[in-house]
Amino acid sequence: MPDRPALRLEHFLPYRLSILSQTTSADLHRRYFGPSHLTVPQWRVVAVLGRFAPLSASDICQRTVMDKVTVSRAVAGLRRRRLVEQATDGTDRRRSLLRLTQAGRAMHDLVVPLALGYEAELLAQLSPAERKALDGLLDRLLEAARTVAARPEP
Amino acid sequence: MPDRPALRLEHFLPYRLSILSQTTSADLHRRYFGPSHLTVPQWRVVAVLGRFAPLSASDICQRTVMDKVTVSRAVAGLRRRRLVEQATDGTDRRRSLLRLTQAGRAMHDLVVPLALGYEAELLAQLSPAERKALDGLLDRLLEAARTVAARPEP
DNA sequence: TGGTATTAGTTTCATTTGAAACCAATCGGC
DNA sequence: GCCGATTGGTTTCAAATGAAACTAATACCA
Image (cartoon, rainbow over all chains, first blue to last red; front, side, top):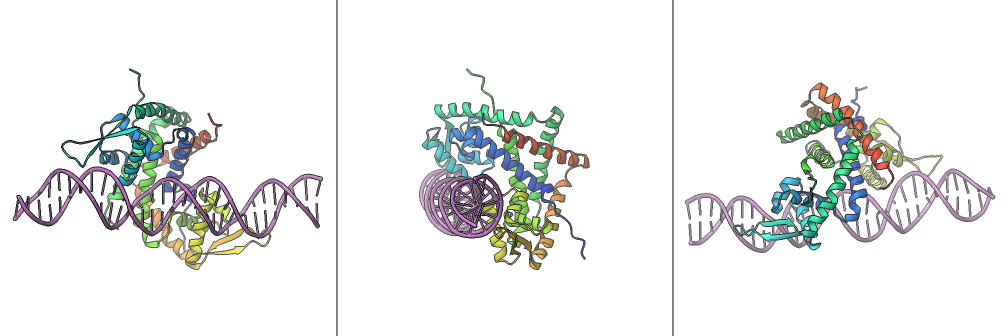
C-alpha cells in the first residue's frame, strides 16, 4: 500500500486564498456596491481614476492588474453612464486619456468611504499586532507567488 | 475643499486577496493541472473524493464551498471521463454516492503531489515563523469575513 | 522615405458562470 | 396513509470572461 500524501483542501493555501477572496469580494459587492450598479472592474477603474488622472486604458491595466478586454468594457460602461470621459492624447492618437467626470467624482466620493468602511470592519476583528503582521505577510506572499510564477517551466 | 478619503487600491485588503488568489490559482493551474485537463472545480472534487468517499453532491458542495451547479457540472465531466462513479443511495434515491474510480484514484495520486509541491514552493519563500503566523491569520481573517458577512444589512 | 513590426484599444466568439426554473423523491403534519 | 413543503440534483438562460482576430496609429530601420 503506497504512502499516499493527503491533501486537506481546507488547509491548502491556494484554496484558502480563493475562499477568502470570494467571500470578501462578494460581501463587499453585495452590501455596498450593489446600489451603485458598478461592476467590480468598473469600481476598480473608478478607484484608480480617482487617484491618478488622466490615465490611458493600458495604464489602468497595469495599475489594476486586469485584462485589457476587461478594462475596455469597464470603461465603455462608465462612459455610457457619463462617469468617465475620454480625451485623445495629442501626441499619440492611439492613446486615450481617461478621467472622472463630475458625476464620476461624486460616485467615487460616495463609494470609497463604503469600501474603506467594509475594510475597517474586517480589520477591526484583528488586533493591531495581527493587522500589522497580516499586512507584511500579504506582501511577502504576493512576492513569493510572483517569484514562483516567474520561474521557468519545470 | 472636502477632505477626501484616499483609497489606494494596492493596499486595499479585498483587492490584495483577489490578486493573490488569482495569481496562485492561475499559476498552479497553468503549470501543473493543464496537462491533466482538470478544471479547478473538477480538481477540487477529486481532492475531496480522494479523502472522503463516498460523498453526495451536496456533501461536496459543503466541503468545497462551491455552488451546486458548479459541482453538478464538475461531477458530470468527471463521470464522462470515468474518473468518478456514481451509485444511488438505497435509503434515499435522490442522493448520489460518488467515489473515485481506479483511474480517478490514479489521477488523484498523480495530481496531489504536484499541488502540494507548488504549495511547498510558495511557502519555502517564507520563514517558519512567517508560515506559522500566516496560517493563523488566514483562519482569523476568514472568521472575520464570515462574521461581517453574517451581520444584518446596514 | 517606405515598408514591416509594435502598440493601443475594440470586437468576435467560444467557454464559464450562477440565478432561477425545473423534476424527482422524501419528509412532516394532519 | 395523503398532500403540501422541502431537499437533491440537473437544465436553461442570460451575463461575464478571456483568447484570438482585428483596426488604427506609431516606431523602427534599411
